[in-house]
Image (cartoon, rainbow over all chains, first blue to last red; front, side, top):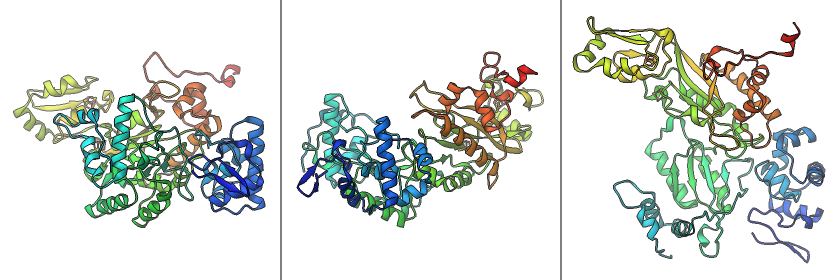
Length: 104
Length: 394
Ligand code: SF4
Ligand code: SF4
């Protein structure tokens, strides 16, 4: 996929639009990836994103969907409302987590 | 368009059988994707390795499953299969189509994808092979206008599938098509929005002939069966006797020796208590025999191919359940099974493997099912006899 251009930064994305280098993530990057997913980030989105990043920092993997729903108190339907591509391709991508391998 | 030299693929066109290579070449006349697929496959055979990248995540809005992302490892060499995603489309019950519907699917796929497909994949779905990320959503929209929806993939409920059942087959012990449709509709979210440790497959066969191989290929196998005696029409037995050796073809091949044939009277008698409902006699003498009158299904759990543990055949958890709409008892049980599995399984652990790890007693307690003799897989070797802490304290 084409690189993501933010101001004078240019970030490498893989074919699915995930960040190649998770270290490059910041809030500006999240907004830019969200735009490719046609999502406008609200405080509700940010709550999920912060949760995912916190979990990832602690465990170095994305949480399983069940865990994520339990911890955030959201239903599966609410997650899809916020991130139409779902928890993996939507939420994790915007949160700058490495591509899930079958968990989400 | 490049014409690839393909000595190895050519081999697969030799011999009297139909060949997918021939079909690929046919498709390649109008599709650059199919052409590059041929090129990449030949290279793959030469190098003896797959040339697809591992795991892509693509999809359509609102769905977490139904599309399998695939990218070529050699996009410079084979640019037309740089993106070659697969879409799984939920098949109609019993795989019945009219030609108009088939033509529409073909038209959509020729316009939006490689034009290559597979009717049907192991899950039962229509498999549309090869399109780009940009075409996924438009293809989905067109399919949905035609009344089609995506099937399951990933860690989700996979598209339930059933045999043709009563639509064509006199042995169906319940309406397999109706049950399959009902479960598919009831469990849409589980199919389209993966939320589990791993996949879960439901397959439905109308009788023990098990034409969809549910016992070997599904986590929950629903297989038609009956209670009470096999129905016998003695006049028809006499017709068979006139032209054919009933003893040779049926009596001697009954696995439990429950089938008796009286050559004097030209009559059949069945020791129904010892019949294991293998269908052998019914298959051989369809005009004379049919399943008993009280019909339903057996439920079996745990079938799967080798992943964490070896391949399993599913085993009985409910010997007999009536299969009538709205299937409440079945759905309640499925819900309990999923809850327990979802709560306890490790990532990538199928229900059968979880039961092996945790033990059948825990599964039975969680689902509220009674332990019954039909659960014994090998008599005397494996008699689920178990004691609770409570029993010991008594
Ligand atoms: S499984 Fe039984 S009911 Fe279904 S098609 Fe086969 S023979 Fe008929
Ligand atoms: S169904 Fe099978 S086990 Fe039963 S009587 Fe016929 S051949 Fe024997």
